[in-house]
Length: 173
Image (tube, one colour):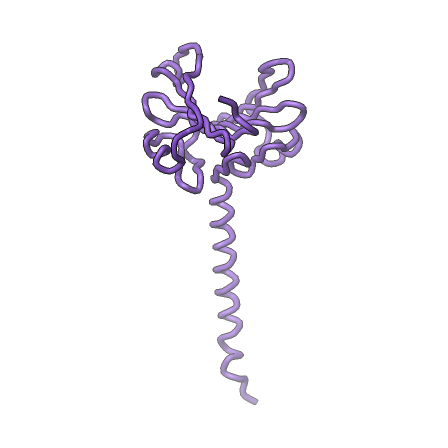
């Protein structure tokens, strides 16, 4: 007895379809791993996560700093990112890495003019005070924060170039 014609190509077609779906899922996961969602997350790290959840997502930090009696900062040197905790929750995520970008393409290293084209004017802009230390961008010139309160996003620039992006719960002007 001869098999129906589709019986020969159907398993191969299902295998190719399954492999294509797997590739698409991996691509979507890779994109979300580097996506900045204003007011929500940077990559898989989300605002509101506990320290335990943060360790599961990004692992052990390279350095932990007690910024104040109520704020703890976890630095991830390989990711060029820092988490800030208060009351046992992530309330701020900062990245200095061009590996992360918003859906519109806002990322570290691009001209601030591109950010304004995409996000519009910030709700406010202020100069950030800091000590000029060798190896930090404070040594390169005045540091300005472009604050998008409604988005939960702060873009840090030095000499008209984006040097950091911060996702926060209600950044203030």
